[in-house]
Amino acid sequence: DGGITQSPKYLFRKEGQNVTLSCEQNLNHDAMYWYRQDPGQGLRLIYYSQIVNDFQKGDIAEGYSVSREKKESFPLTVTSAQKNPTAFYLCASSIDRGSKGPDTQYFGPGTRLTVL
Amino acid sequence: GQQLNQSPQSMFIQEGEDVSMNCTSSSIFNTWLWYKQEPGEGPVLLIALYKAGELTSNGRLTAQFGITRKDSFLNISASIPSDVGIYFCAGPLANAGGTSYGKLTFGQGTILTVHP
Image 1 (cartoon, each protein chain N blue to C red):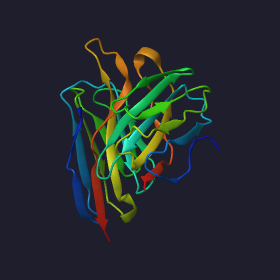
Image 2 (cartoon, helix red, strand yellow; image 1 turned 120 degrees about the horizontal axis):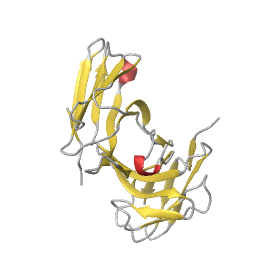
Image 3 (cartoon, each protein chain N blue to C red; image 1 turned 120 degrees about the vertical axis):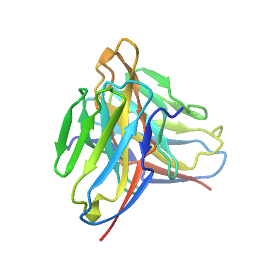
Image 4 (cartoon, chains in turn orange, yellow; image 1 turned 30 degrees about the vertical axis):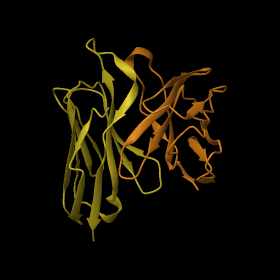
């Protein structure tokens, strides 16, 4: 089946540790995105990548890092510099239509990160 | 910052009632997307609108792209308990020339509760 997978579903980490969240898609989409969602709030963009080996900061990139070595994969690292990392993290992908902007974004099931 | 305003923020309705929610902005959008998110899951696309004035249905859901390109509406007819969730509007911002930027902007969501 085609789709976006995120792993793990639940993740616990100790304060001060870095942790990497996985996102894989087999939809052959060009663009991939990472969002953060806090309780009762909408989605805030952390990083996005429109093409392999290139990525851009979103609205709340501080304390996060990403890589895009393969079209199918866009892992997100939550570093110890992120002051309040406990949140629900969502990965998405879309076809990139250049100047026409992104096509519809499709989301993965999310990873809930809890810092102990 | 937040550039899409969704209303209402939450709704409590009885099964069988119709639901209406909207999304407005001071900026022009070339595309409007409506998503539904169930607890602990990623958002799922419900309807995509690509043309001002467009009216599109998906089962009991109907959405419209406002003529001014600054608003959109989502209606749900004859609600059922499984309609419960958070409904988000989203769209890529368009510049003065009508070209979309590469990122989606999301509304803060409308929380829908349906009582049996």
